Image 1 (cartoon, rainbow, N blue to C red):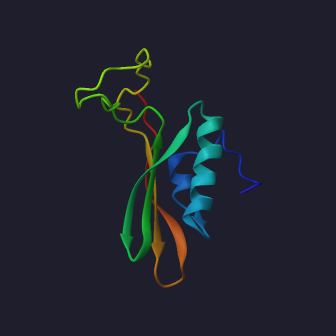
Image 2: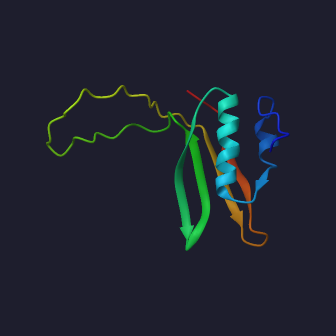
Length: 111
């Protein structure tokens, strides 16, 4: 991965990559996201005994949950909501034959 020019990679180029582990896939997406001006976080995992699929998303994906919904009083001021439902994602899936992690889907769209 050290030879990849992350700034000039497009989605079709990224779809050709494969990795030895899903953690290496996350490292790749982290580098890619930094070069494109956003941060990445881990998201959904699909398991069948072992992890077979992992999704990574933009840090602005989804919405923040209300952690004080059970009637407790807040002890501090609420944090600023930084999430806006960004649809950007990166998903890797293991090929059971050769044990390599391939990019299954990638959407490079931010709101």
